[in-house]
Length: 376
Image (cartoon, rainbow, N blue to C red; front, side):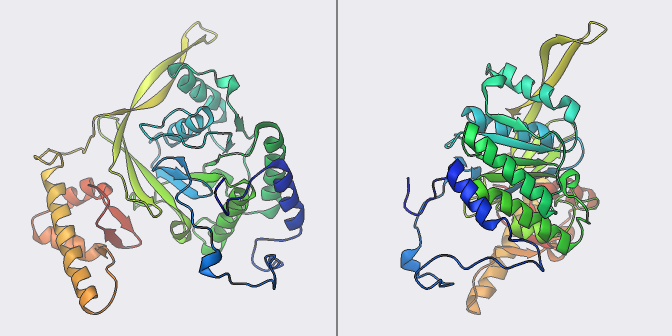
């Protein structure tokens, strides 16, 4: 075990829960007690900090004790992909070429699609020839209210019991944010902050990664719906885009301190579950598997659409110009430019409205800024 890395056991989880039971993680509640130390000092010298490398659950995809978001429009198979992530972690099977470094229990807090959830998991297990019932996968009986301390406390107690039987969970999936948000408005900064604190409380108890599935914005499909407070709290972010041929692009938007990988294209495979309904018809579900990259546009020699390549070229030129000015002024380069300025320049260079609409999903656009490392 690396220096500074906590050993999560049923005993340590129970002790921490008892110690913090009376503390609230919401504004207006009691403040956390000072961390133990010689003088209960708020600060620690840099020499005393643990120096450890990234602790991956899935290599170059998902770290331990992180907050991740998987979002997309309706029909982009968010839950199917979340199931694949969870079952890979529970079984130790590679996730689309990414090695599972720390397999273990995975928990699902579900609020929609309960009737078909077991079928979806069974389809994955049948295709990969894995005994589903032998895997440490646990699913909630009902939805939660992550913005409420009482609901979070109940989940934490359940995690303690799970840890005693299966070991500490490696992944907690909240599917979806809306169905497990609880009272409040996801557009409210305060309510979203409470939701984030609830997620942090769950992951801190056992060092698990918390993966939130969420819906795209109503008018801005390149970002998730609701308050931007969630954007700043997320360590890993992925978006799913549905193509015209019904394939799905998995776009990596944020990978904490790591380089952002290029997008992947996934296709659906129908799986016969080996059972029938009352009429004797076969019951099926589907899984996602990787296929040839789909950009939904004509291809040039680089493998990207010609308009997309032009938009990329314009972005890189603008970022280079902007960062050069920042460096000359003694500031650090930012690697981004204003979305409105970028769109205006693209239009000047001949990009039409439909070109921008079709290709902007291949770029990182967050809070009005376009970043230069979205697609490579």
